[in-house]
Length: 389
Image 1: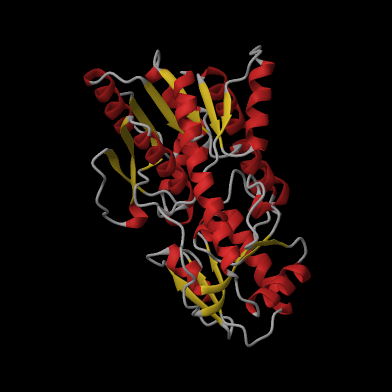
Image 2: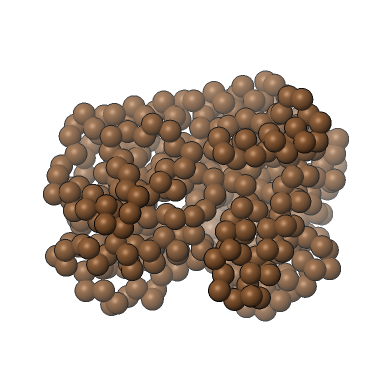
């Protein structure tokens, strides 16, 4: 039995956010292939006091969302400059984390260490000479470069450009020293493979994992519909917020006023009572139930990196889906329940058409088969990668 030390930012077992779903999927797959996994990370203060799984080690509770962090933002920015590291890495740096890690390494022997997220690259010197797997949720620096390009403020452009440069340095260094890199899309894998080639590695050690939905099982039967269009996301995350604003400003005007639209997820309280036919639900305890209750799930993503967990979840929920090309990034050959729209007008028209139609049994079964195959492939990918170590 391999013993794996999994170092992450926020303990993911409750799967409240997309990145946590991805991390927990990897942990679940490691468990299924027979590994003994110890997971180390912070508790997210914004989520309150949540119970931990037996395999999780809590470093401490920490604010994560910049918009709600108050004076911590100043401290993190100061630490970023003093340590010459990205702001998004300085948020997670602490003596507590280092002490917890050292204690675990002194008291236990591990066959491999997973560094989950590039922002934890500063932990690498502490885990040598263990075998190291870099779990890259996306090519992180590209997100900050996108933000820099779109910022109207010269100060914001400078901050995002600095972050892009420093994050790229951290993820490139980690990609070159890790024994394996686990990527979630072909685009990301190609990037990290090229980084390794430039450093002289003739045979890049990069694997693409077929990340499945965060749901344990797909929706097997059609559920009674409660509303027409459903949209869900973590709205403090900039790409999600950008997509929601695009939907409201560019797509919503083309939709009939009698359509009932429900929006779920934390961080969009400004929606309350703003539109006559939009009901803001806030946090919902079951994303799968919410998606299954919608006649169609809209996924209006315009930017971002990695793979869209909400697209995978909507497929597993047995929902009809209208998505932008970015929302399908890294998802090859989706089932017939998914429809693609590239313009606001097309997006609106597909939503109208889908609301007026009913998913066939064959379409739902195809989505189930797609989900099951992807889940099985993911576990196979993890087992194969571990055997290569």
